[in-house]
Image 1: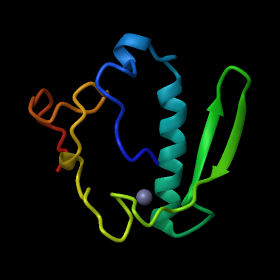
Image 2 (image 1 turned 90 degrees about the horizontal axis):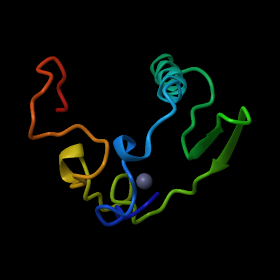
Image 3 (image 1 turned 180 degrees about the vertical axis):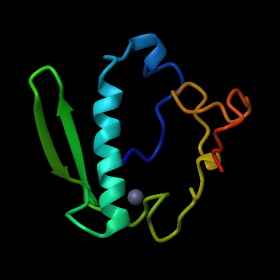
Length: 107
Ligand SMILES: [Zn+2]
């Protein structure tokens, strides 16, 4: 969707901007539901669509996201095959160089 990450420091990360504590749980439940649907092969997946969740007004919107042939993840000439291919040190991503939780694998 966004071909290039914004420059470092342009977008505040969760630690700087803050996160409504229950929001990750709500979004996580939606993601888990999609995963279960994909595994059992039932329902209409969010393939090609994006959900916007407005927690303050309890509204959901879904918009179609057309596939881009030059997408680095799903396009014809893929350049990103792994989270290891993305350099984004200011994001909320797992620090791949630091092994703070040996029970979690990012491979
Ligand atoms: Zn894509």
